[in-house]
Length: 216
Image (cartoon, rainbow, N blue to C red; front, side, top):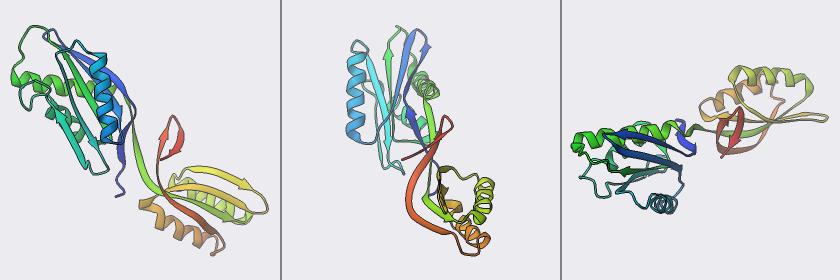
């Protein structure tokens, strides 16, 4: 699966008001159901006086785990709409809890669906969402004659450089997206006449965060 893996890197909180009802969306990254359940309990304690704390979360590269709760709202008017936002935005390993403080006016089923979806979207807009890319971290070892050619290939391909070590040889540690990995290795061998060595291959996810490449 080479498709970018979208997820929340740092959570956040967003809020909307609909006919005097407050909808507060709290968003966090989660790696397991235990993480999700713990976050739900934290929000319930924080907003202990609220009428509803509805939630949805998805966990896994293929959204293997999907859960949602209306927490007392009419069936499928809260949890499912929140879940639909996560699935529609293709955001994984994330939980959204939407807390509602009732404002005195009934919204109806359609109004509730729209409000919970809008709150979920507002919560996500307040988060740092990243795209994790699946790739290979490798070390390319070359002589100084081949260094310029390899650096050109790296630049042309937009491949992140993690580290460069200069001794009697040049060792360049890079992370290559899986979808261009085979082509890059082939070109590296071609431009160095087979002299470059590719070692220490390791499959990782990586993302660029605030201009810096991080591995996962």
